[in-house]
Image 1 (cartoon, rainbow, N blue to C red):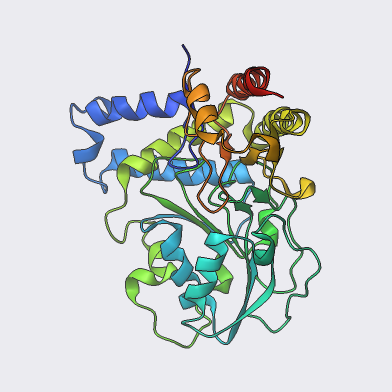
Image 2: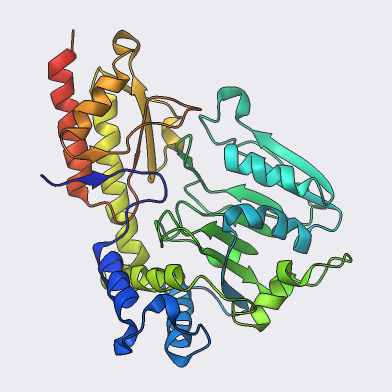
Length: 357
């Protein structure tokens, strides 16, 4: 029986990434040494770092004047690095979920923070639309995809101030006009690599404009000048990221992935809307292509554990929703094949036949 991993993160990765990384851990580049024990400053690993950066730039069509960094600390460390480097007087934040809230909380340690809008009163079930970005803000921060609540910004925002985006869970899932952003960041453990590496795409010219002193390790310029090797980088996740980027390029790039992702999401959302046993949790126009959240309809509440076990018996794992939402969450990142989504749809239909009134 084929098994499918619907975990929100760490999450499914391309089989190529897993297999090639496993080989490198055993024997890196024919050296007889493990990837885990070779020098990060040796020419073999330097070539990995260089290729990963170049593929990142190529696949996202990143313009000149931007740097790509691979750092440690997760997206959570970026919550403080961003205001440390960019917030002089005031920053604006769009609060669309748990991670946006956490980012906003950290920024308040560095200066004034304006929450331009929030969907918190509605349990983050939609993306606010009618808000004004203050033109005197140092930057405007958004979270493009909300893994917990299953909402997503589907287009690039036109911002009058530098735009900063947490793209942890939808990077490489759709085309992005990088020129509209001053900084893009994210933890890689959703669509790119195993946990342990954080990506940052930063417009060089926005740095060095705050008056405060920045600790060396927390200054983006340090990592740009040292090619992400100021300290020992997370070598295994970076190697895995390179393999995922190779896989992405070989499979048609971001545009092809976007087409597949829309097809997968449509397949699943259509079943949620059709099936009387289930219902969606988010505004239809804001539904995420990556994290599909749904619950049982009121007539069938109390059968959550039964459905999760029913799904597991059919090879479908990690479908339990976050405690903030309840119900179910199917994370259908780039590496999830359409066959996996179809297996979930078939299982939902079987469950309907079993318990429908």
